Image (cartoon, rainbow over all chains, first blue to last red; front, top):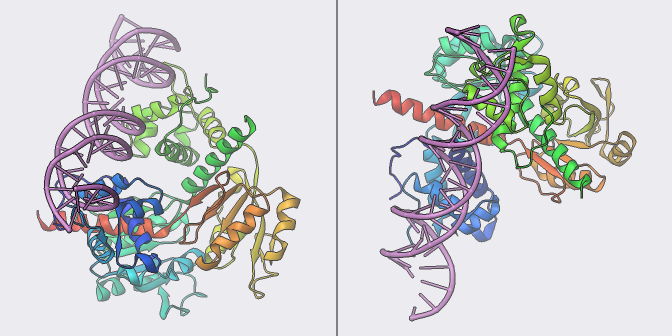
Length: 219
Length: 219
DNA sequence: TAGATTGTTAATCGATTAACAATC
DNA sequence: TAGATTGTTAATCGATTAACAATC
């Protein structure tokens, strides 16, 4: 009953929540090792139980009326929905601090994401080894993409070369781009782009701080 | 007409879009130097003109019927709404690659956000100077917060010390926390928290890649 | 049985889009 | 005037929440 393909488009917000459910489940303490209810899961990430069940309902549900969810079933189901069940190879272009920070992100392996290449133009960085991967010149990108069937490209370059980096990735067949540069990049519509714009988060924080301060001051 | 205080709670999505509007406006090419229409602005970030006007309407609007928006008015108005018009001081705790990447983020100054302290426990890092700021021991945090009236704390520590770092910030009076560690942190409800969880973005990308591939395969 | 649970439909709520008067 | 524009209300659309049958 948990294998239904969704007919309708799944809301973006539901996808974000699925990611948060999965995160939460993988960090669960001992006592929830085996089973968890929608109520308990919801409480842990500050949502309502019906929200959890409705989100799962898009995919036919992961449990059975009367029983609580089996944690293992949830994890496996969510991973399959999110496409984390089959291995994807990734490269990082731009090995400054941000690129090295991303390269050292510990969760990649567990998510079935495999880093196979690091690239830069800076001769000082080329030859360095990070996480057992040697930093290579960007000229080697086509070769590595072909050799490892890379599907995901991560851009951690300066903004002014982000677009040409994306172009290079697209030409060589990359299907998804995770963009950390502050500029929006464009690509053919069959290439998926996820922008990670720090400024949006920072401005949101600033807004929350402002409104919280105002509330406090008028009390 | 652009100074109305909103009575009702502003949707989170509206705030994110305001941030994107502001971003877009600050990157505008010459020809839009002076004025821009809701249609043009919307097109640049893939939205509908009515969405833009409705978002602005929450705050009473920024223009006048018949005229296009004055870019300068928009920028000033959005900055004020987002709380970017008065200076805030920030510190970064954790000066690994991620911390250094954030410290080097170029937009801070323009957004009225002022980095005044860098902290770590690693003796190798303490004493280093980044962006004219000397890395200090975390024991100095209380002193610096008091001296500079720091309101924003940025956590770029490993996950296992994220919560205690947050506690230290809260005790010393910090009002907003920008958390880059993969763990959710908790704080009193009068302290604002913005989590920046990479895994959510990465899982979203993975989901998009999966569904795009499926579509392609069934065509 | 009583209490707790999920799946699922229906009701509510909120956000986006459309329509249009007012203005230039 | 005709065309373009914003502000603002109304209509539509979609997402969240509530309710409840089925199940344990």
